[in-house]
Image: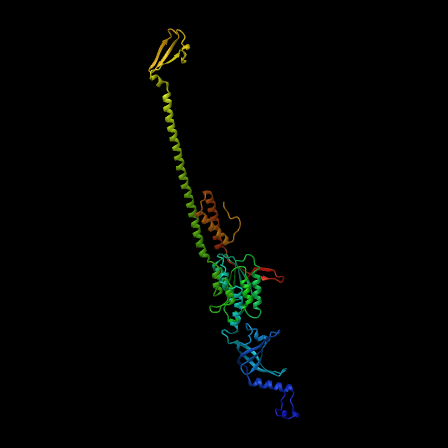
Length: 385
Length: 77
């Protein structure tokens, strides 16, 4: 400002002020008389410019104020206010000299709706995710029991990563942790996280993803409430554990994940079995293996026994049949024995050579022959034919 | 000898082991098949224990280079 103006010069045309002098003076008066202050009113005519600056009116029943909120101030907010929304703004009253317009330079803006702008933005994104079925509990995948490759999307120098590494190393030596570093808060964190998630989808043989960060203010956690981050998490091809929010503050990332863990350590515990317990399981399996084989071999032995019994039975029965057949045969042989016939009074004649004489013609005159009767042999001779 | 023919990851290894135990306990097997299964089971059990006791969790870092290729390298510290 600098120049000292005679406030009374302007009372006559000769002392007229220039426009610039007036606006400059008015601006000084406004800024001196109205320190930055909180103002409440209803948003109207909201417009976000290409530059990122926001322009809108703030009004009540009888008056209206022009407002601007510059990009450097509004970028901390999760979403722009909507027309008709009741808001509180913390603003510096000023006068825009180029337009001679009285206005508020807004430094902060709170919605009077429950939870404020954050809640509004959160609910809006949540509704969009719900509409696409991404919050459906049926979408939740089971975590692998014995994961090997685990991707960890988090800040490379935060306590979250340290905790996850410590817990995993203690519990599950089989694991291979693939850390995908990203900033988790601040300008550009949203894009970085989405880049990290894109990288995750290109990892081979991945079993599980942990995405997380340590605690922080709601503003710090906001990156994980971006709809596009949530969609990228939902699109991961393997199960995801999210450890972003707090007990009370659930993020959208938590909601779309297959499991939500309260802290990064808890996420690592949920991700991995305890090797000590698995070793006990292995012992049980070993015992069952041994019992299984023992039972199997004793069953085989039993079967062999039974088979042997059956075989002996068959043999014995067969032998018995043979014995009976032999006995019958013996009886029949006995009946056919010539001795039995002689017993009944028949005699058998043989010549000197022992040939049996069966026909009259064989008995030539004076032939000596022998007669076999039941109790011996008698010498005989043919007397006449 | 029934040895593991290809390297399985831990989960597959344990799955196979559980299957072997179930078969030994449940199925009608001849002694020869049972013995083969048992031997494979013992071998897999040994490998699984070894993995749990001898190995240490590995920590690596994933980065993308300018060309957009994925690089996996050991994490310092």
